[in-house]
Length: 394
Image (cartoon, rainbow, N blue to C red):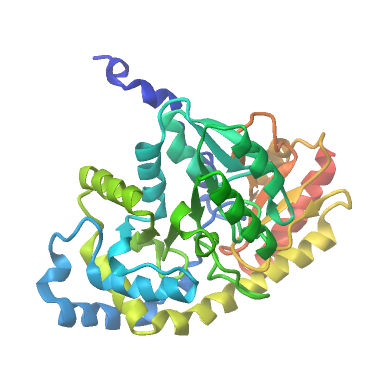
């Protein structure tokens, strides 16, 4: 039987996630991987999991194992309401919805908002998972210029002034892949532009709690609450295997996200949500977050120092105050794909930056480096190898 004949036409727009394919290569023994965007296992609060599980069973009993509301487990939504208020977002528990990781919201937003040919504005570069989520619905991507302070407001204004943009997608804080953060002044400008053109912004915020230096910045949603779908996750500060994502969205968008979820998975796992609720209510996040930061900060510092020591002078890189990534760029004629293959042959991996662009041919001389999964000495060894391979390719 030719099963290919059964596939929907939208599958032509679906491709294997490039990073997932790269991670298959880097899983082999002896490989030092700077490729993934994966939390370190030692950052998981394993020492309290037994305690949290016992609390959940005592407090919620059978209801922690039963079907629950599509919108999400109410105790978790109550806990997240307080969590978001600390960030400057006022959202009642009823205004918050839970999904199986923030990736679930990106797909649902694509399903609800995108009709074939709709214009969606994204940063250049942008998060690959968002491209994968939106692409099956066949949007036309509008590229937004970025610099060291994130998306350029003038580029956003030009895009919206040209008309027909269905929504804007941004990762404002410690962006994946660049690690860059949109400055306070630009956040206010962006909120004003979004309001001026009455446009929806999807603000993806998975990394803002991972701050190692500097002062926290308020989400853009705090400046334009009626125009922003705020999406975040507990994957980076609790455990990704629990698959807890959450969103605060304008009422109509929220109602449609719930309808989509009803047809997808009915609801996110109740026991995982109950664990997350107790993690927040019990103050465990506040106590555990400094431990996570104590793991990642020295690794980031080790990478920054190694880049200065081993990369050619023609390379430049981002200097984020937190998050999980550093972005490096070389001369325009540098083929980072060639560097990747040379590095993998020496048991060192990263992600070529071209995969994070919607325009083919862009980003050929760029790379994304992750520092959360490797120890400081391994990071230094890996960056030395990369520096040597870059020098060869140049």
